Image (cartoon, rainbow, N blue to C red; front, side):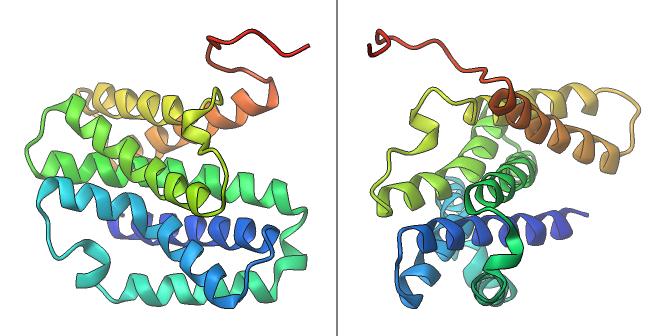
Length: 202
């Protein structure tokens, strides 16, 4: 279950990276690099913080192949993915839900405090997108008022609350990931955002 979630998260984030790189009209090499940092950036930072080296994608070449394959498929079937920004949002949202759980599980396996595990889940889910946005000359979503990292944190707390109940681990994983995804979808649909410290522009 954990390995499957890791694979699905990698594919989702790689495709979101491809879509934004193509939106920026990058060449094939640029698209591949953006796909790679989007899919592997957060996990790489997490592994470095935990002292797990070589980092995950260096030890399991499957993830490198997945990113390359996802990039090729997304380029070929771009027109089939629907409207670019809608597709980017959906794949990015699915990715943060899956990667939040991966980061939390890594922290749990390392014997970390639940708060640290939630932080690791948020880093895993968010920082690939941070690197992607910086390379694409955008202000990262996590640093704006959109509900992004907040959704990851909520999913993390849900994970640990459900873990205290007699519920199968797979159900805990699925429900916690769904909380992240649904929270972000609802926040965007109903324009729910964190309070801004700056007055609205006239």
